[in-house]
Length: 135
Image (cartoon, rainbow, N blue to C red; front, side, top):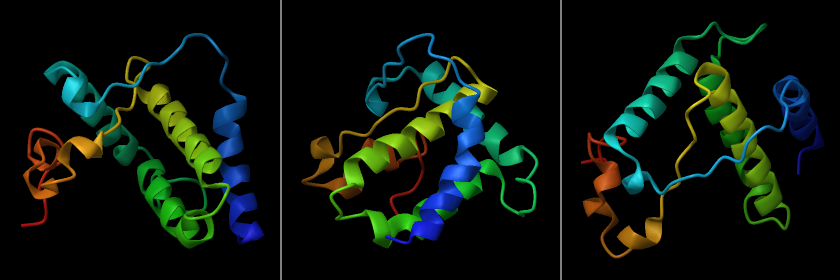
């Protein structure tokens, strides 16, 4: 694993984590179990993150930065023994960032096993959820 990338990500995200207090348990729902209101609130929170000012010293907004940092860490973290704890941490940071723009929004998960036989027919890949399946 590239130690410099890990340290950089830790330093950037540490401000988000250190400013948080434990207050309530967040329960993630499978995306198809979310109400239309919950999905809209989630998408609105993502839009707000995208429209926020870029991170200091960067052209990346917070939402773009998460995508970028995941891409940068992809080969260093995936298929490694540390993948699961790292990914849980990464999702926790993402959730904390979402809570900063809307404290009612909990990030959903996708139970892809429900779509594993025909992923191209997944309702998650429609306009009602995240958009196109690539066709």
